[in-house]
Amino acid sequence: MTETRWVDPPDAPALAGLRFRRYADESDIAGMAEVIRAANAANGESEYISDDYLRSQVVNYSHVPPQEARLLALVDGRIVACSSFEYADTTEGRRDYRSSGQVHPEWRRRGIGAAMTAWNEARLLELATEQRHPGGAALTTWIEEADVGATVTARARGYRRTRTGFHMVRPGMERIETAPLPDGLEVRPVARDDLPRVWDAMIEAFRDHHGSHDGSDAAFRRWSEDPVLETDLLVIAFDGDAVAGGVQGWIDSEENEANGYLRGWVDPVFTRRPWRRRGLARALMGRTLVLLRDRGMTSAQLAVDSENPHQALTLYEDQRFETVRTAAEWTRAITP
Image 1 (spheres, rainbow, N blue to C red):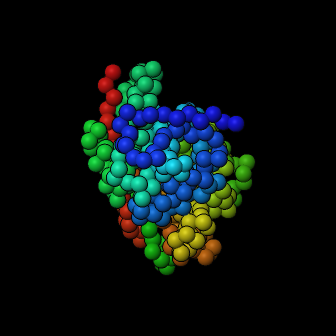
Image 2 (image 1 turned 90 degrees about the horizontal axis):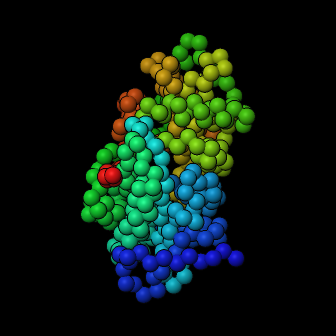
Image 3 (image 1 turned 120 degrees about the vertical axis):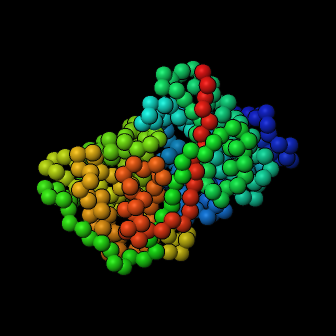
């Protein structure tokens, strides 16, 4: 039997029945997923977090075991909030110590999220002190624009807004642009055995982007074991045996059922440096949208960073995607 590890965050509000403990084992997954789904719905997020998806994210951790990195808030034994932290190195050489959390909308604006944020920060600052990364360090978190309470907490704790993420939707699947592939490239079927080299190419391509990109073995497992990954919807361009770029199309049937639509994802989109500025991403995106339409999808969606250096936002707008929601990264420097 897993030991229950109760904790007492110093800033915890005095609410009847409220207690905090660390994540114990997979028996916590269902309660955590329920909180995340409720929080997402309150924020206007369409993404559906299934129990299986969350289990894969928890089990395949990169650096900090979930029993140390995940904190739960319970009221009378029911999970009402959950948080986690991790760290990753950025393309600029800095190490980001990242925290995230969700509070069930019924329990927001009562100080629970602020207490969990403070707890995470204390643990992350301990890690940063131990590691003393030579490239510098910062605390980071992403917050949905609709989550006003979390934004207020971040400001109060000295974070500043550093970049914006856009959630974009193509509301229909008519008039899809199908541009030709650049000379010398071809799209070929992808097998499961090809996934490691597709992953390596994707991570290499994203090294030119702002922020941190986890290329660890654990991150590969989270991606390759995700139940929504279908090789038939991986549109990968090859130059001989080299992966030049690609687009991952995917369909989350649970998300579609929960939201009452037929919407596919076009995410991520990547092009390696030698094959950029040749129209490859545009050609691959068109092919991916056609595949999703042929699978019965009536709309498509993706996410993009405002700091993307390759004018991706312009490409997506040209492909009739519209911004429907934004989130912001908030950052606080860690001084030695």
